[in-house]
Image (tube, rainbow, N blue to C red):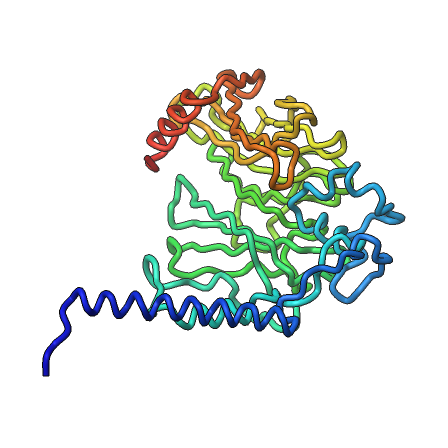
Length: 373
């Protein structure tokens, strides 16, 4: 029997791939026709607000006026509470599995297996996780720079979505360099981070020897920035509450701690965020006393809106950088432009001078400095 040449096999595979693409396209069209991928109805925005089993009333401000969604920037916020408000007001769908889940699973079954990266996966969610609210997302991982065996991972956790007070923030801790993790669970069956709305940031302060788990926090002005701190993160009872900023519509926070003992700003901590109480201005708070008090600076006004992307610092000289994005008015129509704000004096003053090629070169330098370039 004559064997196929390599070129013949390649041609055959190409024909198979084209055919498979046609079949998949047909399957998608068929599923759409049967309503498996329903489009949101045109009248969705006019849907009368109602609470459902999928929207916790604790996530909706009492007496909230749905007509104020755009004025308050709810439609531009990225946090879970804003998402619940959008669902409650009929501006978004929720409470059902993703309509593309079945197709996604089918497409994944066609891929070669296994699809694996790195070593063996380690489960962060230890212990019982039963019921209908077993979803975690948006992890923020950090190792103790003074003890790499100690790792804290914070995340959004639906376990406490109907707890009172609400608790949709979680954490898992490793003391063996990530080989195993233990999910933090208090005596009430929830995480120790009650009255928080997720959106996690994890910081470690070497000068103080303290971990800071930062979230959107109802106890800090309704939807401010705060969380819990501990010198013994494995103990759920060791975490005590603190506030960074008392706000009503804070969103998209990020953080950085200067842990270089040779830095002129050793021990300072920084948190950046968007403050939608004034339309979405970009702000930073920094602490010079290990988180006891915080000083605020505004980096950009609400208009044009600059989304907070990430704050980081130079590990050698203590300079701090905030990356932001001008989204061109939001949606998909406007152009995007990147911004970097820099402070060379420990957060007291900031400049925005990195644009164009200068911006790209500086980002490349930052990545190389952090061992990522």
